[in-house]
Length: 316
Image (cartoon, rainbow, N blue to C red):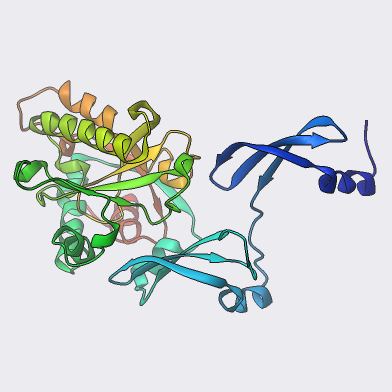
């Protein structure tokens, strides 16, 4: 039966909390009662106010800012959107300073295109693009971590060098978007120490044993660190990745699938391993010989400099 607005709004203060039923991403589900009747209260973060007057004071309105870590131009924090005294932080903040034009293009609102990268396009256009980005020093922050110069307090695990072959070493870090405490939204990164694999395009049949071994070791390590069963974790890689050094995303299976896990961005590592294992050809056959389809923002250099000119036949 419908109720008036006043009556409906009066129900919320009457809710008596009993327990947290579920928490995932920006949503919580509370179990309780209203007037001795069972009730569920689902709360989800509302969209940010985009009014310019509000945005102009947004950063100054933050309080109880706590730095979680930093590396090169990247910094991440927890903060309160208001006074927040006595309450847990309600915002996870990333700061890129000083940012580049590439960052502005990446994060700007833009139309998205779905493209197919053939082996020829990869060989003739995308691989040289990757090489150029690496030559510009875009991986310095990654190498700083791998070499032990920065962010070591955030390293959750590093393969012991005295017992692990050089090509099989990796380290685990919390992803910048994880609050580091909510297990249902756990998101980690595994950075491999070897530097010859830039992306999934470099994976070959000969790498299948290595991939299986590292996936199993990651699962065991994360299970031990967080008391999570291995079948509550999933591993994936991005294509195109944000940076060209092979890394694996590890997330809790209950993590809400946002843009970073969407089709056109994320590929299951288990599926890649299975594809490689059944691929025709010798041990050198690999992912550089297949078509890959993914999404690109219209402001990205790969779209403006490669795929748009190819579409318009200005590039062969």
